[in-house]
Length: 130
Image 1 (cartoon, one colour):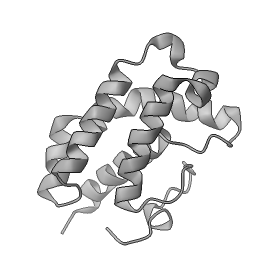
Image 2 (cartoon, helix red, strand yellow):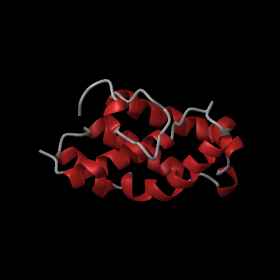
Image 3 (cartoon, helix red, strand yellow):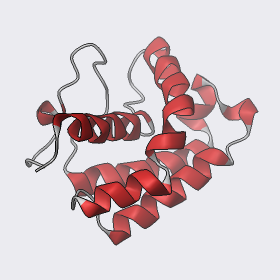
C-alpha cells in the first residue's frame, strides 16, 4: 500500500504530466501558469529516482519509464525562447512534447487535460483506479 505522502508525490507527478499536454483551448493565462509550473516541477518528478520509485510500487512499467525519460530530455533541451504560450501551442518542439505526454497520460487512463490546482483530485481525472 502507498502512504498518503507517497500518493501525494504520484499525484504531483500526474499533475506535472498533465501540464506537458494541457488543453490548448484553455485561456492563455492558464497555459502560462502551467508552463511556469512545468519548468520547475518536471526536473524532480521526471527524474530517474522518482521513476524507479514508481516502478517499485507498480505505478509505471519499463515502457512508460522510457517514454517519461524521453519526455524529460525533450523538455531539458527546449530552447528558452520557446517557453511561451504561443510556442507551447504551435511549435513543432512543443507538439512533440504534447504527443509523448499524451501517450503516457492515455496509458495511465488520464482523460482530462487541465488542472484545477486548488481542487486537484486525481480520482476525477482517471478512467480506472490506480
